[in-house]
Amino acid sequence: MRGMKFLPLINIFAISATLALWLLSAPGAHGLVVDGLYVQEIAVADQGDAEQLRAYREGLAEVILKVTGEERWLQSGDVTRALRDAQSYVQEVTYRSSSAGLAPQTFIRVIFDRALVDRMLTTAGIPVWDRNRPSVLLWLTVQGADGQRELLGSDSEHPVLDLIREFSLKRGVPILLPLMDVEDRRNLPVDVAWSLNEQAIRNASARYGADSVLSGRVLQSPAGDLVGLWQFLFRDRVETFDSFERDLAVYTNIALSRVTAALATHFALARQASTQSDQRITLRVEGVGDVTAYVDLLAYLQTLSVVQSVSASLLDGTSLELDVQLSGSTYLFTEFISLGRDLVPDQLPESDASESVLHYRWVR
Image 1: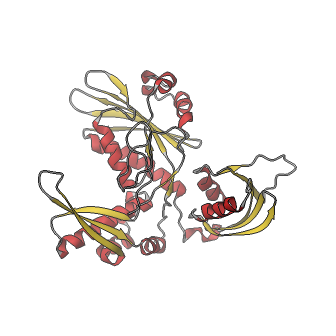
Image 2 (image 1 turned 30 degrees about the vertical axis):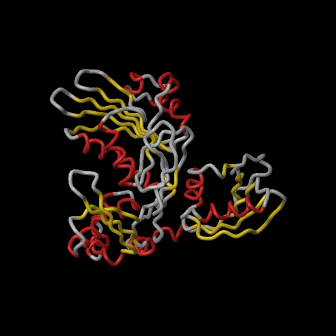
Image 3 (image 1 turned 135 degrees about the vertical axis):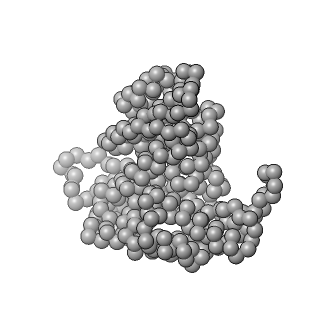
């Protein structure tokens, strides 16, 4: 089983070899690759047919939620029909037992056929979210009934962190928590974080290199009410929204779901609808010094879901010119590249720049 490439809830993160998705807290983390999107594990009462079919439906619903990013697509007629026939999308099934709790528990691990799931969504006109996903840096300040405020970090102990971890796993969204070391505390004091000062938050977030930033504050009243305000920063977009709930899980899910939907809308690829915007572009890449770099560059480009095909049209020293067929717009292609660190825009003199050619440098 391939695991989600995320970092555990410790100060420094390492790639996980299991499907358990943890919070991230590593400076310089850009977009990340999320594996295991088409795999789901469900607790079952037994290995009978009825429980198996229930698990297939539940598992497929969770997979669709991960690969579309939005709960609303579960209400689509095409999706509801697919869920009724969930067994047709199953590729592999295994069982395991666990005695970690008070009583033994059986789990079924289901791998769904990616091609079949994607084809169903594409036919329905539903965008599919690639496994290359933008990271979300989360600054969350909590104030308890006693009036004390705390800006949560990766080492904090608060029940909301378990909820965030659970959401990150369920939805396949890389969520980072700040280290809250001396530098973070100097750059973003707790009262400044509470005020949701946009510029201060942007400055404090710069060291992490995250693709988006969600900052929030939540006040727990003596009566148990949760009252809060959120601010989402993505590209040049600034969105502020409030929230009022009594249940911490609901409160957290609403904010994170809203952010996830926004990112999925931006990055997910509606293949059926994109045919009118399909483009063929010329990509000139500097820094391709040897055969290994050439092979790595082509392999990297082919991992991007917006890329249909790549072929080399010119090789000149360490420069490589590629003909790239896209299944979407040039803008979406550059957005996918921005999630990684391997290709960076190459700044050229105006006399050498061309609007018809994209100029990048290979820096892996």
